[in-house]
Image 1 (cartoon, one colour):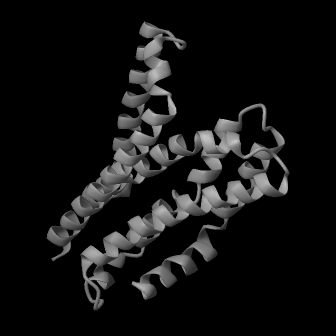
Image 2 (cartoon, rainbow, N blue to C red):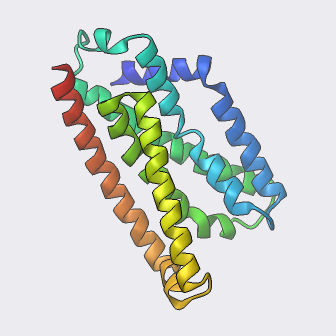
Length: 207
């Protein structure tokens, strides 16, 4: 496991520097524009590092890594779980960078704390849906499938907002702290279920 993490971190240092760069830039914008677009910049800066795993999988697919991976003294399940761990570590690192910039900038971190459950929901659901598609269909087809699912989700939210109104009682309940933290907890369990599902896909696919 340590060797796999070392390999992926080396690949990111060589090929994925832009992820760290954009994370810092968006976190800085979130501090500068604390009153405007704080959600947008905080969300992007927190998610960018977790999305780096997609670059790693794309590079591995190009290099035919699966042909080498089956020869390692590490099971395919462990190799798959490592990608999920890397995605979660990237998400937590992005949140930590946001907190550091808020502390250095002397801003009130309460806004970021209010956004934290939303960041966790999006950050955990993104790999939970995307990674199984990648392991099952490959990164090219998986991107199309994820865009389709994301489009449906956005459309559903837009239609619901149109019908009920942005300030309706239903939306106030959905956006309350208790519901959002409950959603974060559910997203965490879906993340774990997704990991087990992907591990089974890879075991059957490359056994």
